[in-house]
Image (cartoon, rainbow, N blue to C red):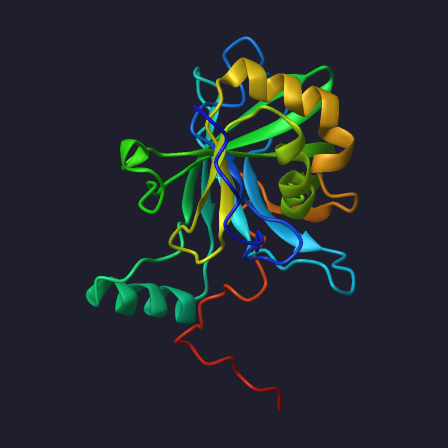
Length: 233
């Protein structure tokens, strides 16, 4: 298929990085999957720098024999109410669930997320296709560094290649590139250009709750107790 013309500037929901630009084919195959990382738990963004993106807390759980995690964004009560209201009006909502896999390409550690929404604004023959997004990462004990795709760099690079793609505006209103070439060609592109297509500054997440830790809580998500705390005399 011939390369399609980019219709607009890529805009990311979280400003400097998020699961945005994607592929209709997986970035990782079973041969690249790794099981040497323990990402189970609840993660919250830390050490946010000026002008850097904001990302909601999320959980990763359910790693199984298929080497997959279930990722769920922990949205606030207000955000959930907003999502419910939009659903009642039959309006699109931001995806909050992903199927995540981890693997390596030429010693580059990658997260692959399968979005929980389907393409609705691309060519008709892609209608209903669920896309895959990806990011580079490093794990340092309970600190997760995620280098999301720099969409503007990707937009600059793709016209210089023979990769096929189109522009898509998903339900989170963040227009992004959808690459349609097979996995092998996309992998080669990532190997050759990973120093350019990923953000230079990572988003940093700390594991604040582990699967066996019931005492830790994510700040801002606590439930208010109905029992009043006794005052000291």
